[in-house]
Amino acid sequence: MSSPTRVLVLNSGSSSLKYQLLDMRDSSRLAVGLVERIGEQTSRLKHTHVTDGDTREQNGPIADHEAALKAVAGELSRDGLGLDSPELAAIGHRVVHGGMFFTEPTLVDDEVLTEIERLIPVAPLHNPANLTGLRTARSLRPDLPQVAVFDTAFHTTMPESAARYAIDPRIADRHRIRRYGFHGTSHAYVSRETARLLGKDPAEVNVIVLHLGNGASASAVEGGRCVDTSMGLTPLEGLVMGTRSGDLDPAVIFHLERVGGMSTDEIDTLLNKRSGLFGLCGDNDMREIRRRVDAGDEAAKLAFDIYIHRLKKYIGAYYAVLGRVDAVAFTAGVGENAAPVREAAVAGLEGLGLAVDAGLNAVRGDGPRLISPEDARVKVAVVPTDEELEIATQTYALVEKNSH
Image 1 (tube, rainbow, N blue to C red):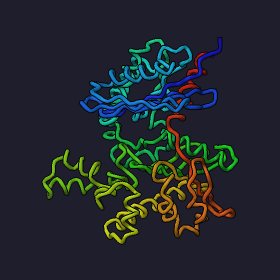
Image 2 (cartoon, rainbow, N blue to C red):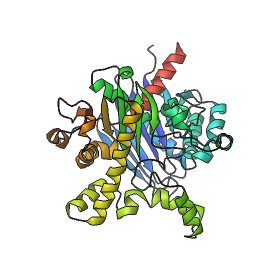
Image 3 (spheres, rainbow, N blue to C red):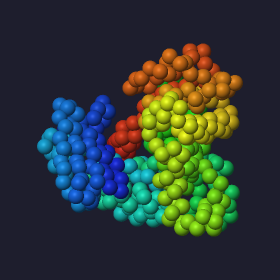
């Protein structure tokens, strides 16, 4: 009998559960779905059996993540793809924070769960939900390999000069304060796919990856290894995002507390949920912001200009860090779809060998593509990210390695 080739990928959020079932023989998707508003009366499960295009919805209360995963298992079973299938090789889990302890995909056991739990103080929004998903999946299939794939792992190759903050190292170490970075599965996938697009081995290519979604991050990838990234201890640092401020003078926090009379929780909410594009102009959807800019809206134009200014600064900074750049790759919702963002981000950087071809940039497409002029010294690319495929690939590789 041939060995199983299917991997179920789970991404557990605080009130949601995203999932995909993939067949690793050809990386094809068999089923995809989302459970949202877990714990509310208005929970919804949307499930698509990709092979035959059948989509089903369940509406009604789903009490917790355990109930959500059981509901997902039921939907998969209806399609003959259940958790009890002998063709299921493993379950791969997205875990946001792995600290310095987890530098690669890891088979989950009790000790691993304990360490992920210890990291909750540095990822209070994400790790608890990730843990719930892990524990629930283990309870449903205790015999099946469960693999944790960490958002931070790709960035653990950063040198200490990039990862350390300039504060007392004893205090930093005691409280695990350093730059960890996030969106690692996306940066790993996109940097590798960019090298493939150029027809080169990732070890030969230096890439600046710009993951621009509601959350946004940049990375400098040298020969397949991350040497710098914009997010830090938390996903708040770096680029201007949908609702997060990105880089900020830390004294702003003291000022808001002392002069503004704001509590720590209020400042946290301000910087994470009421800042960025939303804080600047009341919208965090780039399509709507561009519509407003084109209509002459000054607040939207300023928000866009601040967003681009920060983005351009990071491109320049990472160019300096890498010394030689072969490509700049745009990915995620904004990066893949917002041609004006790509155009504005490299405008004026012709001296660095960067430019976009207006015609190529305007074309929409699903696959990786170059949007720079043919003779450009540095290629500019649009590379759709696929974090679920990356998690499935890393999960399957680990399980295969351990089975031999």
